[in-house]
Length: 368
Ligand SMILES: NC(=O)c1ccc[n+]([C@@H]2O[C@H](COP(=O)([O-])OP(=O)(O)OC[C@H]3O[C@@H](n4cnc5c(N)ncnc54)[C@H](O)[C@@H]3O)[C@@H](O)[C@H]2O)c1
Ligand SMILES: [Zn+2]
Image (cartoon, rainbow, N blue to C red; front, side):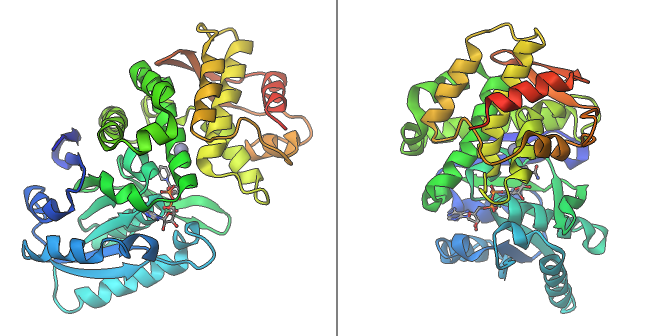
């Protein structure tokens, strides 16, 4: 079973990746040094419905005592990353702890469950161990690795948060089998991002096989997840706290992407869809700024996004709204900005203070 690590001295941890590996979870927890008996598994019903008994068995067979907490905010999955749900989780944790148990947390789900669980683990008793068992493609290639944890406030996403590393990331690729199609595309947007910023061979593989070709080929899927996890693990190992201008490369497509996602409250563009469009916007800005060396890259990226059923344009959002979402002053369209821009496949550059007219024109080009 392929395994890699995030290297952070005494806080280093393994990322275990494989197919149908859930039965071996208990032994991997032992290997990762989890000595607490009670496993409080934070999850959602869409996820746990498919694997509760297998998971429980994998834990009890190694002497762990599983207990489940359903993180549901009602309206949407993201609503579970909220203060009320966090509060419930912490109280539940304290009630189990009151029985004199030694506890660790396990996040079984997508990025929402992962961020919430990691945050609770970081804060409760100033930190208890937790592990990530990601079940969406986004979580397996991105959010479960790196220790960024947090919850949302009514004023905005991820406003309460802390970096707190898990003790292990355990990716069973078979758990993705029940994931709805749109969530696959969402995760593949991040996979495409890794290809552009760091891994031309991964990008070629994506071009060749497309969404269904990878989704329906377990060995290829595992390979793709492995390559992405490796890139993220390496970047996090070098720049855990986002201080050295290395982790920023993961933001490729995210500057315009976040703005499109935030401004699309009605048309509901997903994160991955917005990042896909954001990567195209970054290509156009790179060309206008004269840093794009590989002129064929934007067209290749467009074709790849189409192969993964990701949109090339957004609609119903005013450019001014996007500028505002990016932190610009409404009247003058002046503001500081920072974009990760492609140079060639696998190579990027970070530029600051790009003229507003260039950004405006790139955003306009992608408006439907
Ligand atoms: N910490 C980080 O570094 C980081 C990075 C990227 C994103 N994020 C966060 O991650 C969140 C998004 O995560 P996501 O895209 O995984 O979405 P998600 O966690 O909301 O999951 C999407 C939906 O799929 C369901 N689901 C999950 N696994 C399933 C499975 N195997 N089968 C069937 N249904 C399943 C979930 O219950 C949910 O309804 C956002 O809150 C974002 O801010 C964090
Ligand atoms: Zn992202």
